[in-house]
Image (tube, rainbow, N blue to C red; front, side):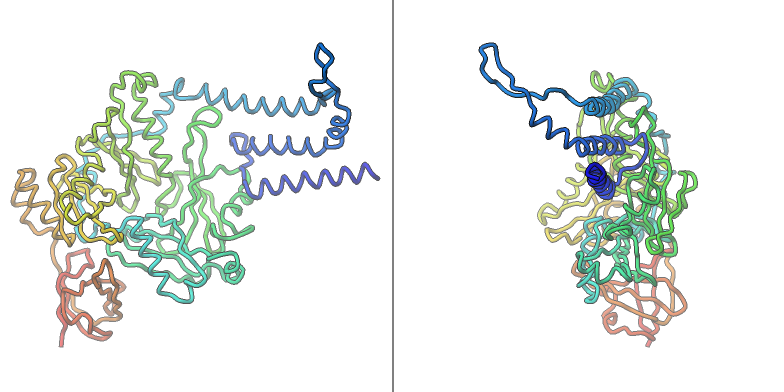
Length: 553
């Protein structure tokens, strides 16, 4: 009975340890995962120690005295080492040795070509590949601004702000052909979770990156699966227990074209050796409301998903691609043709996909780019453009210098096609993080800068400077960008929003779901507009930014 009871106690301690380790660490049960082998080795060591406690105590009591040649006691030692300890220790060291040897054998020193080929690039023509967009479609909201707008929006809803906070995800996606950032709400703390977890998280935040409009999207049913959940509804734990062997990473929050929230978990494999050359090979989509999970191969991922490939993974692979064009040793000595991604990156919306943009600079670090790359974050399609010019931080300094008396700080640039020329666009913010001006900087000649309080004014100033420098024709600078349309209708609903100290009115006309924006400076009658009033507005085709507004008496 005593031995049986001892075995039960030791087995229980071991099982509790295994459960807690797996519950919190969530290692994939996959033989190519270093996390799995760490789990296996550590668990085996702990179990061995637990079942050897009695023998260990006896060994301590029976430790032999060690004397030197003069007969003086200098220490004690175990009379013997249990065989099981030697076996387990040997296995642990063997596993560690396998991974260390594999890392060395399959390192870039010996496999530079394989690392270089993790990403395949084609050479493109920027003017033809990247279409020009209307000035009213340029995204002006970066992640920091989106975070401020989202927090402000939640603060307007008393019943929510007391229970929930805004998550810091702010994933950039294309939603119904518009660049937006989306992020879920999260429970304020464990007590608020206890109070609300029955109904789930009731809404998410959607920030329009063009108009700066912020929507708190109420859901018909609450989100039951999120990173702020506990126990089995925590999205990471839910995925691990549903797919125990799955290698996944880069968990992002997205919405489909109907606005239904999903968690997108990118699955990956190792392309080189045992555990080197990590690369995405598909995704698991989890409905954040119902928990329904579907696994897709990379080629089958739905087109509305925008971010399968993690930006850091792409930048790592671009680093390999640029460094090892002529082998590993050339990247260390000589460095002929070696180039690296610049320190920052941003995103572009092209054909309903999100593309990562980053510049490529030479190994000499001369504050200039030799070109730049665009990478589709859903398919990893990669295009390299040979356009020598200023690297992004030099362009940011040039834009800040244009308004240096105001002390504004530039956001990291977005790459645009303006009149066929690669152009950096950025917002200029004050110390409070509010957007005050906009700037366009030519990539090839970054001393050409156009700034303005309004997007249209900044773009016009930039195009005029391009024309003055004979980089585009003067007739191009004078032409109207897109046709203007006139619309008449009755206001169905209207809401004022303060943006950067200015009031912007968002309204919808009867018979349409289109949302128009009008700045208060357009008409003194805007503050008095109500539902049912008939107006005549003008705006560019395919744009909802009102250029003029007339109130029909």
